[in-house]
Amino acid sequence: MKFITIDKKDWANGIGKSRKTYKLFGPVKDKNGFLIKSLEKDIMPEMDYPDSVMSAKSIIFPQTEKMLCTTLDESQEEHHIMKRVEMDNSPRAILGIRPYDAKAIQIVNLNFDTDDFRDPYWCDALNATTLIGLGINKPGPFDFSTSTGTGPFCEEGLDILMADLDDKYLAKILTDKGKAFMDVCEFEIKADEKESQALFDILRKEAEKNIKSHIDTDKLSEKTILELHDAPFWDDVAFSCINCGTCTFVCPTCWCFDIQDETKQKSSIRFRNWDTCMSSLFTRHATGHNPRATKTQRVRQRFMHKLKYFFDKYDQGIMCVGCGRCVKSCPVNIDIREVCNIMNTYKKQD
Image 1 (tube, rainbow, N blue to C red):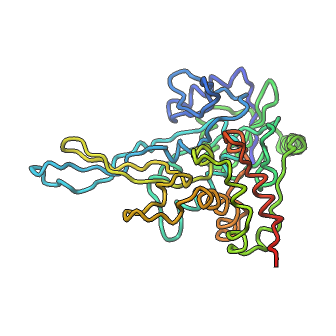
Image 2: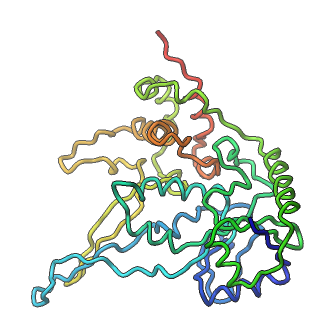
Image 3: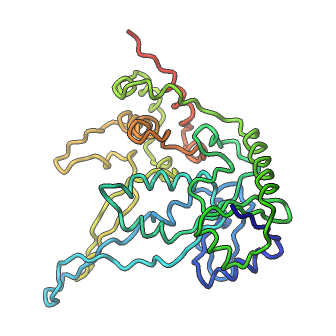
């Protein structure tokens, strides 16, 4: 494992060199908070940000993306034949991504890159992306990532993990993609491996101590799907929900989408757009029948997917990385931590 020391005075110069090879993304202050945005021209990432409103998932899985296109002009030989839209999958790098957001990308990848099916839009974008994570020295009040198998210094899914040491960064290179990025930046000051790893361990343990929010998932595997599905608490959980879908749009692990065709004059484009299981339209059939017609059914589906269906199918923990965005953003204060603990402790009455 290779460690590099980066003086913050040299940071901007190194990142500037990387722009010749990579399209850069990173945290930028917006009127509504920090967003992971394209770092155009000389814009630098604001690495000391508390957290971003949305995760970095949208860089790989855009909220709206063109998939296929065709012409409706019958004078053209290939009219009405759908062709894949050319995508820009040149090298890109996301700077300062939260470790739990990198883990979330791995979770989403379980859906889009399988033995049976490979989504080329997701896979090609992910392969082109280098993830440069920044450890969280001071976790926020909504962070419960240590309960979900991630944490403030989790390395899973990252190509580089950096630690903020006030006047410098200590970078741990985890993959060949990470090394390639560092080489382009010409950050070359090597740090002692043993001392650097010890420092990372100290920072991780200190950060984990500061996480005060926790959930328990140890009994979820013992319960059957029907036992939880038919539990009586769902009406109470869903009572205040207004089905706005905010939780699904800020969640870094939600992957649901809709596909729509838009036609203008003699051209047609097929788009993929994020969708939300909180909407009544999500499962409504063309016949008008809706298997999840009530908000209780939809709220139950969301939490059952996150905390039970995914858990049982993949045997890789729950479909949540503990970022706390849904808790922070919910206008009616529905809290996945509380719901998880209700599900975990529920006992069916005989």
